[in-house]
Length: 257
Image (cartoon, rainbow, N blue to C red; front, side, top):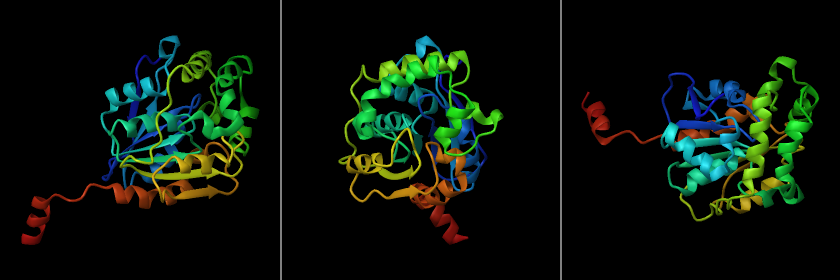
């Protein structure tokens, strides 16, 4: 059982350091294919949240735990509930960019589904999601060995999802990011049955003006898992724009050479 946030660095690339945040009951390791695609232009980090009843905290407290372990990242790529965690990091001023993949920063972005967010906990425990649920969420058939990347399958993962789902409503959601100096981009699957496509417009209205929006045809709730190449194609230019500028001393030395 993980009592603290666990980090896995992927590749030895250069560029911005980017945290990959999973949703409420998913594993950070589900981002591995996307991380591999981004490793040429960035330094991806897979994030696994703490587990167990002691991890019963909302997105703000979870963002503080992530920051404590990972330090301030250049960017965050967040799925589903991970968007709330990422928004708290942006509000705290510790990241320069957030990519939302089938995400939301406030429950009301989900429309009527937002009022039912806490039910994801009992569903995880009582419904015992498996291959059918993972395939429905992904909108494509998921091999049995990959099901744990998409839905909570162990007893610990299910009880953690239960407590975290209940904790979401006990804290204030992050404020809108419209006035914050953060670069954002939105990717949304048009077959997402958990975070419906209508969420994209509500989310974008709460982000800085001009935030790019991309609707992924045929993608479900976890496009980073099912469509890593397409996600990477859309994220690479955004990450390149977040890359730190070369230092003046380095530029001078290069000119002198």
